[in-house]
Length: 235
Figure 1 (cartoon, rainbow, N blue to C red):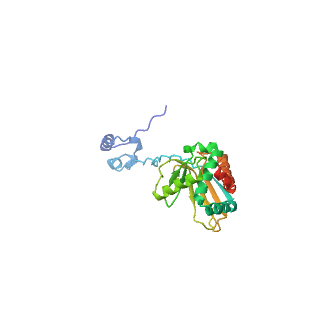
Figure 2: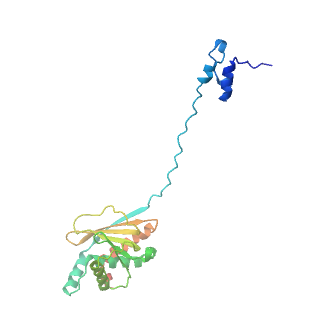
Figure 3: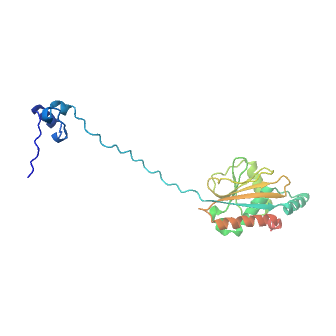
């Protein structure tokens, strides 16, 4: 049976090692024949333990918004002629009135979207929002009166729920390409009418977590059809 080698340790070194809870086996003697001396105990430096980097909590995963966008070109020639005839008869309507009325008709034809927040529309004038009920049966004259009253009162309905926000860009040749959604709105319609007033470019942005993509596309088709066949706005 093999015998354990006896370590040569000076009595003082042994006492020092015991006081420091140091196993003699970890010490390297510098005395004659490898004898462990007091200086070996006092000079012992333990190996540093590996340092583990601090655990960093994983950032919570944030679901990326699911955004769909649809564009449409709308011919305004027939509408422009009809509005001119009405104006000569003393009945004036703006493109804002037409868009609000057409939005209501589009909601009536796409009930899946009409369920969202009761389907009111938020018009975006000058950095604020005015929310309007889009009852399909509401006469265009009543809708216009409601819109003008909201503008005159500087009403801001940003906190009120609405299914859609509607932003009419100043007339010109700028076309909307990408637009963010407004807080609390499932859809946003951006409309740019050309300088001649006979053509409009529309961009409809939608949160597909709230509304179905196919329903959004159907809504824009209904809006386009209503505006291009403007007699539907008066029935």
